Every structure is written in C-alpha cells, then in structure tokens.
Image (cartoon, rainbow, N blue to C red):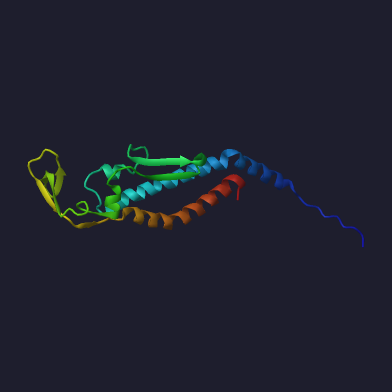
Length: 173
C-alpha cells in the first residue's frame, strides 16, 4: 500500500497558543482577582439587604460596617488577590446574627441606664432613667447565613457567565 500524506492545518493553533500565553502572563489572573472582588462586593450588598429585610438593626453602625472601606469592615485579599475574606469588626454583629442572652450567666436582672425615644431605647451611662433587663434569650436574625444561601444560588450563574465572557475575550469563542 502506498504511503498517504496527512496534512494538518495548525495555523489557528499558533493564535490559540498566543492567547493562552497572554492569559497566562497576568491578564487572566487580573481578571480573576477583579471577578472575586466583584463577588465580595455583591456578597456585602446582599448582607446589607438581609440586615434591612430582617429588621436586624437599631443603628446604622452594623449596616455601614458591610461597606468595603468602612473602618469596621473586614476586606482581606490574600495569595495575590485569589482569596478574599469579607466581614465586620462590629462587636455586636455576632449577637444580632446568632442571638444572645440579655444578661451574663447567673445574673437574673440588671439595670441599664438610658432613655426611650419612641420605641427605641438609647443607652446613656449617666442617665437617671433606664430599664431593668430580665434574663431571657433574644433570637438572632441570621442575616449572615441567609446572605450565604442567596449567594450560593447566584454563584453558579455568575461563574458560568464569567467563563463564557473569558472564553469570548481570550479565544473569540
């Protein structure tokens, strides 16, 4: 049987390798870091929405602490930006989210100085008025877990769209 020649057209392979090389030299990593920051910002927005929806605050400190750049906000990028931690340093955030006892363990009642403005109590150390707190459990609002559940549902759509965008951007697919 005579030898048969097989011709393979590799002209597009060179373009593909060049695009891979561009993506590999920082462009993709920069795009990925930007995408992760976008996810972080979206999560903070959802947390804020859940705090409002669940009526979980009486001041704006907690709500404002979930803005990027707020002094109480936690926004930590690690590993060249490929890991992102978001959260808050507001001391009472976990009490509002998880729930808490009104008094320390073993304390049946305690006096809290302050005054009432409408249906809102304002703590004031030097006030002559106040309220007596009896020991009871205050159920948490669970805004954090709610935001995570919402984000978990959204992430697959975000990732699929972003991968399609990247394929179009890098490879014209």
